[in-house]
Amino acid sequence: MARRTGQLGNVIQFNHTKEWRKEVPAYGRYWLDQPGGGRTRVTVPLGLCATRTIATKRLRDYIYESGVNRTSNLTQLTAPATTFGERAERWQDEMKARRRRPVKPATLDGWRHTLNKWLLPLVGDVRLADCGNKVLKNVIDAMNKQGLSAQTIITHTRVLKMVVASAVNEEGEQLYPRKWNHDFCGLPVIDPTKQHRPTITKPEVERLLTQINPRFQVLVALLAGTGLRIGEALGLQVDDFTDECQVLHVRRSVWQCKVQSPKTPNAVRIVDINEQLGKVLRQYIAGRTGFLFATRDGKPLSQRNVHRAFITAGATSGFHGFRRFRAETLRRERVPEDLVRFWLGHAGASITDTYAGGLRNDVVWRQEWAQRTGLGFSTLGLVGVQNVIRMEVARSA
Image (cartoon, rainbow, N blue to C red; front, side, top):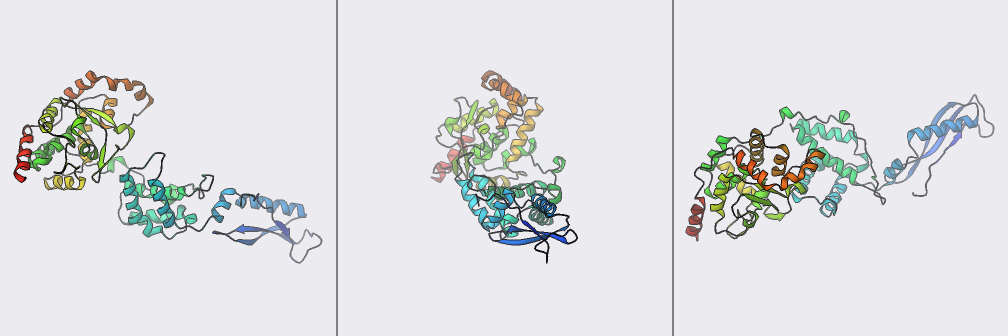
């Protein structure tokens, strides 16, 4: 295949093989590669041509415009007849072993859910070479019928596109390059005003603190008072805090009870703590080692069990609602935007944030804003919770 340089075809006039006659219709013939291998002879009409040279030029123009000799078309047609499902399985294995920009286990788990729930049932048996805009349109139509939100549909369709793009040749070039037509496919447009972004309010935080199992009270306060992701909070260890619990270092995360690196490079950060919460943490940490929130044998807590405890206590939003609550609190108190992004572990919005990155090393400045901002809720009743938990552990022992 690498030696192929294209074809020119040949021209004929049926029943006239010797002399060219301008009053007889001309035809062009060439070979067309078939999906999965093999070739078929194609004949196209060229109309009346005064000379053989004119007919040959018309045929060459037709071959060029139809893309018969295009390298990408040749590669697609001669590639093995792989199905979408087969390629998806290999793609998942490749993503697990990827050295450049490794993929988090939680992301892989989400992709697996997308494949199992939607893509494999809908297009698993479709040839990868046929996965174009028409197939994508059918997938989007099926998701729309099931009432999926715009963001969910977009998330699922990204997986389909990534699987198709992952098929490459020995030079690393895509076997099936696609120009996706979102208008033709009917890909929904996200309306920010209609997106469901559940958050938690001050009364809900304070009610949750009083109704939840005492074992999780400090976790509720920490999530609402720092905006940590749940995996980051469950991955905290005692030595991640300074002696006065005024600063914590986010160094790791926990997913499915397993320790991993934080979500992004920006998630490895420092978070300054308000004195109200610091006082609670100092009493909670006293005498502890290892993970801040752990099982009796010292292992990280399961997010599923923690979520169940939150729902049982009356929580109306997921863990991310606490991050939104903290972001709203910081915005309400006019905290500098680059400091808000730093504390929440978000990337800078512009090159100016990179230039001003040195401000993050100004501990005094950060602490002033941490104390000025407050928590946005009351910690009344949390002081002394350490003793309650110790009593429960001692009693169970």
